[in-house]
Image (cartoon, rainbow, N blue to C red; front, side):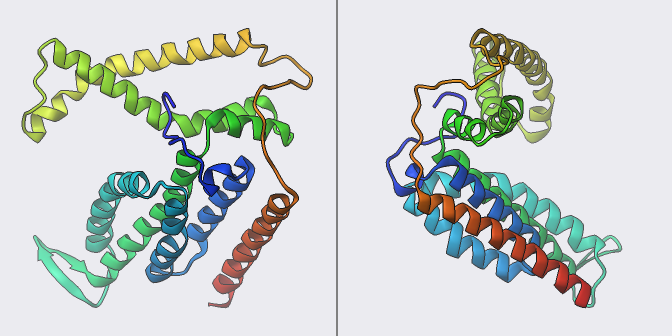
Amino acid sequence: MHGTLFVSGNSGLHRLHPLTKLALTFLFLVFAATLPNLLWLLAAFVILLVPMSAWGGLLRPFLRSCLVVITPFVISLSIIQGFFTPGETPLFHLAGFVLTGEGLLAGLTVASRILMALGGALLLMLSTRPDMLMLALTRSGLPGSLAYVVLTSIQIFPRFQERAQVILEAQQARGLEIKVNIFKRLRLLVPLMGPLVLSSIVDVEERAMALEARAFSRPGRKTSLLALADSPGQHLARWGLLLLMLALIGWSIWRAISS
């Protein structure tokens, strides 16, 4: 769909109710916050997220998106944590700074937590139509304004990426040279950021006007042409996921108190 990461399909993951996939996303977020170390986090990613993406026929875009987003975090966190976290296992010396094994492990652990949380959100975005998710949220009792905030948060990065690509292509058509070294590329951000910010502000206004034209703020129950398929089994599964999240949080708190 235009302006989203959604990849259409008819897999079992696509057919799940949006609230079930949202509950799974929150579960992976809790995993990211509560699992104790790097090995646990990587195991959860490989055992849970990778098979789920394959089940949905989304393995390639899922892994590609994870790699693109997580690589800068791995590099920066490994350097920062590696040089500024004290430890007893020096790996590399640079101008009075020491890269320690403990610091490198800490940086990789933080990056793996980001990867776990990011993976859950990506699965939701890749397998769920935004309008279906918003409909599910409003029908569950969430105010329309809050549902719109959730939907906009999910769409903001793909829309920014799409808009930036359009602006970049327009600048290239006007003679802007982009095949230059890294320092000159940083200077190219100036002609890109101005139109990007202004067009985003205009886009917000246009979307607000479109929503009001569709009686978005009108009180009362609204009808929809979309149909959401739910089942007692999925409803029960969502409660089970909620209990599992609470158990993980309780286990994490107990582990922190007892250590």
